[in-house]
Length: 308
View 1: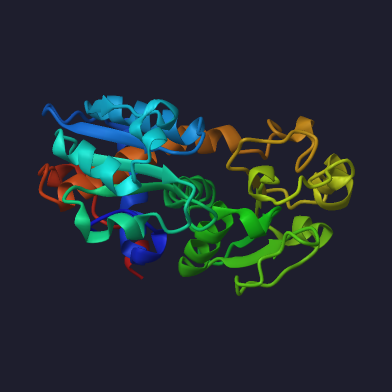
View 2 (view 1 turned 180 degrees about the horizontal axis):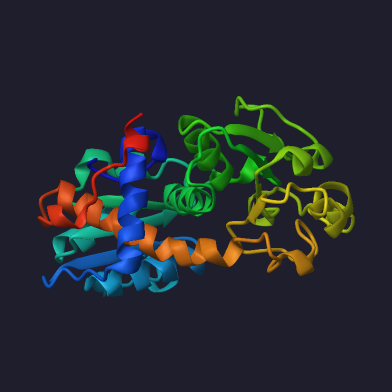
């Protein structure tokens, strides 16, 4: 794995290996004891993803090269490629990139000689969020194969929906989508169902916010919760073991009733906790793959389940 750009690039056993490595890091601290630099190139606002990477980097002992686009040479017209090459040239060993372009990684492609991790690409991909969602589901059920997962919300504008839908199907889940009129994405080859059907059949419901910043016009949300969101009445119809996920930020009272954000079946803040360990595992994986580190002992063998 030269760069970590999409979960689609991974084999099933590679996905499980990262998940198991993340679990290992939760219980067994790891520090590289070697001076390495990681640059966090975030061209879009971020709280959870950026801070999660920073905590993960500090836990690993990486030196952090922070970046703020609003005070950088981007304002002078510098391209993503030239920004990335600058950080590579001054000694960064790893680039974490979030950018509004759906395909920003094509600008870097094989022109960058250090590993690159995708922290969000427009509406197309959010692979590290996908991996922490997979870990949260795996912790809960001990498997992903055969689970009924429904992704609910602004499917059309969600990179989380795209990354998760394909990865979950690859791991054997039965994936459905649910969206208000106009929020569907016809390019995704998954069946759509209503929110009322979704809550009754799902083992996992992944809620998405309305991404107003990607809409041409601000969407109306006054009656969204009652028509398309997870109300307390709908939550009571869910299976006993079913869980609620949300990548956040959360629009309380829009896609989910505020009382459900921290209810007994919610794993929303568990997802955030898992993000640190998943991102540690991903960074260690690519650094090891490039030979920048040699930490074979830090990687657990894939479980037999993953190989089957």
